[in-house]
Image 1: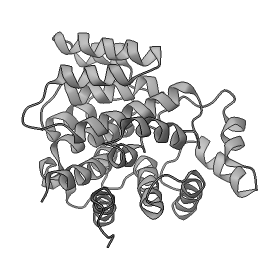
Image 2 (image 1 turned 45 degrees about the horizontal axis):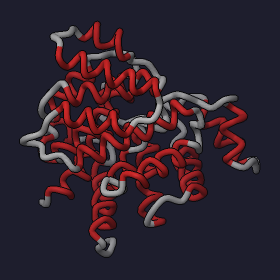
Image 3 (image 1 turned 120 degrees about the vertical axis):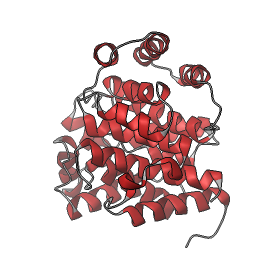
Length: 290
């Protein structure tokens, strides 16, 4: 299997594995369900189409409303189905915009699809986020997570420098609050810090500012997919989403073969998720979809 194809597979399966293990199940949650929706829409449109992605989210929610969605997206979807423009729906539910991690948890396909065009990556990450999360922290969290996935795709897993990886993230980020968290990551990487100290410094809750950075730290502080995900799973808090985001980055770096077989075996809809990853890869390679 080619290196790039393995990384695309690793990122999407890594998301689902992290999500599922985060809830101690082979069944994934809304994190993976919405990630699937992003991938489906990118593939069908051969790129980003906001209106189509909205309808894909609504369709997938209607088919599986029991995936553990938070209160926001179902309320937004209900408004959209009643005829309200999606651009207005999110603002009504969250005046000022949501700064949760809901748009970051699903963003891996955007990071993969735009791994070779980083300016476009930010634009599409923001637009994808705005369907449900319009606060600057929610949008920047999604963009940072997508960028981490993109850089992981471009990283050689056998020899890479975590501080160089972190420097690239710092050069990308435009929001001060995330810059501060990235500086904290650098300090934590250089010290023998306990997990409690890591959580106290970076957070482990549902806000993007308190979950995207700790997912990135989990990746940078460990080597190999298993060690990385084991660490993320041990941090508590918003465990399924932190582990899903960590799995997306680690999978993009190490590839599908580095994910333990016992974690892939029995994973719900594994074949379908792998098919989506292969279709995304084929689009990037300019090949005909199967």
